[in-house]
Image 1 (cartoon, rainbow, N blue to C red):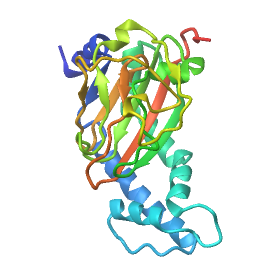
Image 2: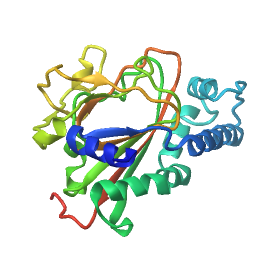
Image 3: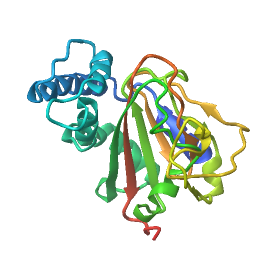
Length: 253
């Protein structure tokens, strides 16, 4: 059995697998493009960025207010990259699409890249942390019986860098009841209950935190239970997320 078949079997059994070294060259090129984009955005908004290393550039962007505007450069950068064609092209990579077609057992023309996200997470940032949840709990109206998430950190990502926590095999239990969060995320809240919706009772049994090298790509079933990890290192965690659905299957309306 070749490695790809082993990975697909792991996906079916455990609800996920990490394709090692899948996008090493592509990720390096994307980081360089993002680096250049930060510089261009700063120049266009009359903001001086002194740092030359991308992690420091991002941190500096979040500290500086753009003259004449009510937002920080970091927030502008964050919003722009969430909709930027660079990210969509990266997530439409033929290597990713090839694996998705094999998992879904469908044609390339049946695949829809339904949703993209780009995240810049800084140390001890709890604002964007999500507690235990399934992506099907957030995106049920826009999913089919075949739906998955691709999660890609654009650099090495270890537990201290805020890597994902997962519960392998939890996808086999189907969609769980998600509780709406009536509180805003705060320091007083448990991380496991952050987000717009969350699964109220999840045991810590069999959960663990993933590790990534640059170029690794996580493929995860929509029903896999997972949550955010808190960043303890000084690195900025840069991640791209794509959600793919097989439109040859019935929508879960």
